[in-house]
Length: 356
Image (tube, rainbow, N blue to C red; front, side, top):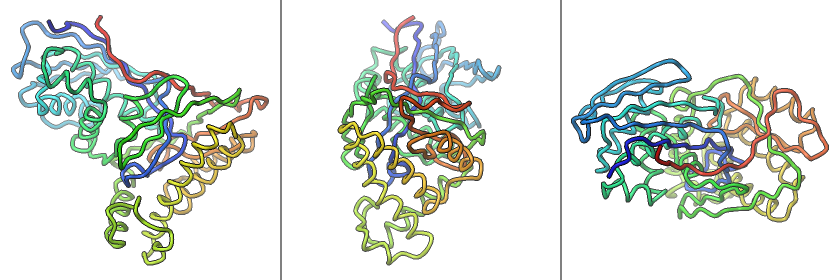
């Protein structure tokens, strides 16, 4: 029998390193954080199947939405995520029922911590948990990759953000005290222990909000695709450093960032496994310089935030997320006090849902 009330939680994520590599079939090293989005879903009596309605409440915003499952229709902002999740689940055969959805969260929106993916994953898990007897729903719950792809389609097709799978996989596969080494070609996910020996990852908000759909994120993705086309390779994962001189500006710079960033992911993984935190800090700063100078996605507010963290004693700092605003990640040794506004982030559990 279907659960009549469920609560789903999906965490945001911090990406240690490997930015704008996911949609280039590259490598990344994120971890799920303790903050995220919670969706409490209550099935509406007598509203099972396509004839039902979704009533959604965004508790933090004091806003609501209502739409029929048979035809969700387009919307903007947070409503697009709700309608998209319901529509994509229906298209996959998971048959979400009519329901009341109460949405809340403690991960900052637009801060580069993947609040949008956390919302989409939490919505999908909540609606799936209301229909445990549907074979398609059971299949999706048991296949994180398939569910990540569905959630990515919500962002791509319903909100206009052409994201990859990094955020969704980090939210779904996260684990305490571990980062995730994700290969976006093979889609193999490997846990990497985060044994920091007192060192701390912290994030500081630049106070400049960003939006993947309205920022230059989609433009950068198109530039990477064009660079691959000119080089005659399937993706920039296949590009060799010596080939990059063939590309015109700014495609050469975009491609060079991706190629070198994949190398930094592998080096950061070794540093974590070796417990070499100073080396990891240097890699963070190198990634930031590349994102600023080659990928051109930093802003004065982000630069000021990174400089403030480094001046306070961080071993390294870099912008995280899609760029054009958001938060900066830094690594601090055990003896250095954290500056004002810097918040320590620790790995939390992956997304989950439970009855009640």
